[in-house]
Length: 78
Image (cartoon, rainbow, N blue to C red; front, top):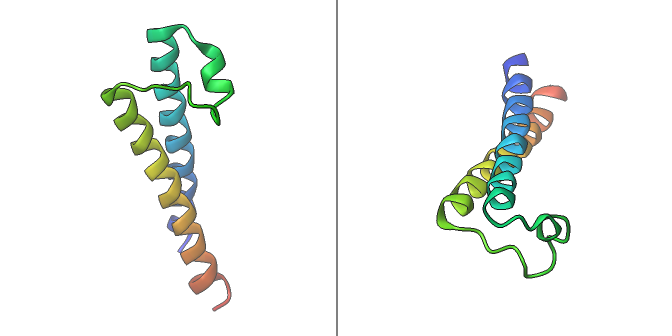
């Protein structure tokens, strides 16, 4: 079951890179670096493409967390 560890790490890493890519697209379009840093404020207005890329990255990161939970729940303790 070591392949689950590879899936976990790969999806977390790839997801983080894709989220950073969506932020880079936003900064390239608007030049507003401050909105990315202060993400809790309602300043970040993503286009449809940036939003989809961002959600794909977040989905991959969530997949990595779920795979980690499954791996540690069912395979580490067995």
